[in-house]
Image (cartoon, rainbow, N blue to C red):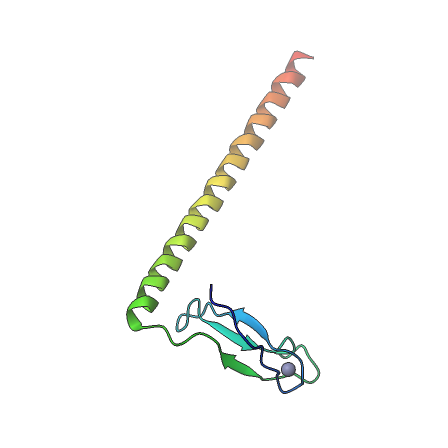
Length: 103
Ligand SMILES: [Zn+2]
């Protein structure tokens, strides 16, 4: 992966941080931002500068399609995990009950 040659210094004189955007307009596009960005800081710093060039419309569509697939698969995996935990819980309860019946 291409790395920055020089790290810009932001408005608050801190070295800017390289982040990756996951917005629908710029999926995977890297930008420099300040670690003090955001309203949780008393004096938030609004420094922002793109590092990567803009995505072509085609690569944006391809990336968004892939992201959607990944999220769908992750959701399916979570549902599967919940089902197995439920099966396991029911199994433990039934076995526990049959043990109690034996005693
Ligand atoms: Zn800053």
